[in-house]
Length: 183
Image (cartoon, rainbow, N blue to C red):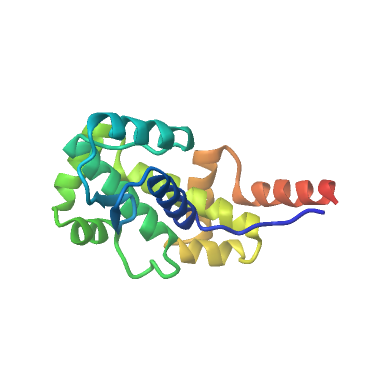
């Protein structure tokens, strides 16, 4: 039997983090996606144990202030891209308002820490979202382009091909062929 499973990565991450913190008897409050406040002081050994337990699934405790801001930028971009109605938001305005810094400052810090631009990260996230939507197969490419705030399907297709090496239509055909082969 084959099942197609739709999932919310934010929920999965939050549940995994919660489970690990509770297993380690860490009292915490969730402040936002990727941000928690530990209510008790952790000694160095307890903090290292927690880091070790979280690392295998890609979780990392961020300690440098600029790295913390970059992570907040990434989280905000992911939030924006995965909103069901992000057409009303310009990414620069959304980030500046959400993080209470000018977009210029955010852009400079992001580039300094990641050696890439915010715009490139947004494109990568939009393409990942487009791939998920294509796999789910509930929307046309026109609807996906509109949802992800592209000016046209051609614009989405160009960025998709530049990022993945194939067009969204070719990606759709590959997914369809894989489904047929699994039957």
